[in-house]
Figure 1 (tube, rainbow, N blue to C red):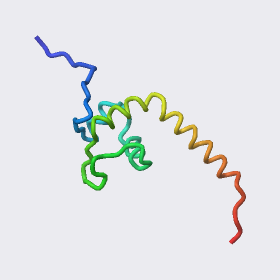
Figure 2 (figure 1 turned 30 degrees about the horizontal axis):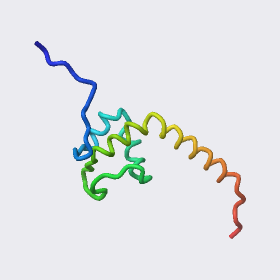
Figure 3 (figure 1 turned 30 degrees about the vertical axis):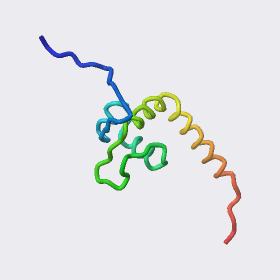
Figure 4 (figure 1 turned 180 degrees about the horizontal axis):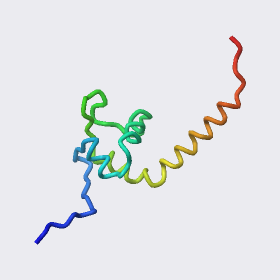
Amino acid sequence: MAAEHADAVWVTESQKYSLAELVALSGLPEAELRELVEYGALRPANPEAASWVFSGQCVLSVLCGSSSKLPRIRELEARLGQVYAQQPRKAR
């Protein structure tokens, strides 16, 4: 009898996940997850470490946010870029 792959994963706040595991669980590209870390929306246990480790809470945040918050963030970034482009430049 072959083992079946389960689509569900039990996540607890105390569990730790590597960046590769977070990519696999969230379905988001590594580059987007790195951007979230850069913006402070996602915090690895030790941001200075060579290999990031994330808490289960980070996984839950990414799973909840990836379907609703990321498109909104992109929309707001685009709006901010438009507003910034319309601002007069200061003469030096």
